[in-house]
Length: 393
Image (cartoon, rainbow, N blue to C red):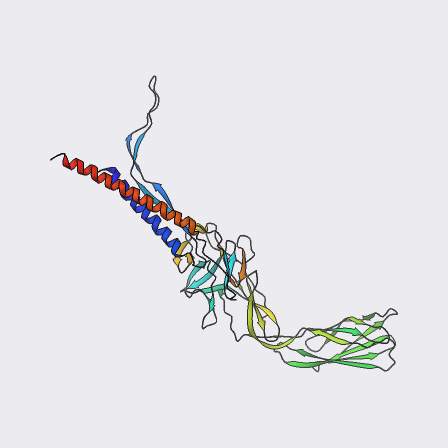
């Protein structure tokens, strides 16, 4: 049989693969996080009809004579260029700006994806559309995330509650330096313990010859007293730190002044709160999921883990816009948004497909013409064989 016949067949197969790849790219033009692929061709082994010879004496050398035996698909590579951003306004939609991948777990298998369209399931887990559970680190009760721990499922329970114990009370305003003795002022502030239980902390200010004595009491321990020393310029200086109650609530008196003829002492703030229920959450650029509670508290609940690879092109597509690691992708390197080589996260947006339709339609034409040309090789080879068959007639 003619070598050209088989070369044409290999060309048909190769260009059919190119059509398949291009068609898949166009089909996924609106798939979030999709990365386009391209086909690389490579010639096959060539038949040697004459070997090369070196120059000898008065005879020049000759080049090898080889006849190619067709083409084959050398590989299908994935283009991991950044896709465009589409704003969705949904808090659970996330977009990576950079080279990182979301990490999900499905059926015990670790998967990697660029598609950040997540939703909550019945178990309050953040999941991808195909049921992959988003992975990350869960914060401890104080909102601290330890990235040294193993990653796990991210769960944002809507029944999560939090209470903040009061450990600091700040006072502001003025105590009149010309107040007569005995003058006593009292301020009562609500404070909370770690369970959100409210109690009253009473601060009593008594005028002395040198300034004021401050006594704090919240009925959980013996009362504590500290003196404020008055100077001629209206400055009151605490002679010691004032800690009140069994929880040692710190009373900040540094903003209290001692000018004449004015009494404006107020409780500026206290940092505790009663128990509050999770109402919503926001996504930080570092991948932190920050919960907003009904008591006004904001606290980190979890942090999304991102992955990077030495050779992302070596990843294997696993369906559902996900990839799995292979021997040529390199080991997974886990980190968080903002780490070197991973990128940042944006909430309320999705990364769209990076398919370039103008390029894909051009590839369609190239593949079609290549297919037609190789089909013509087969037709011509068939005509030559037919002529050979007619020699016997």
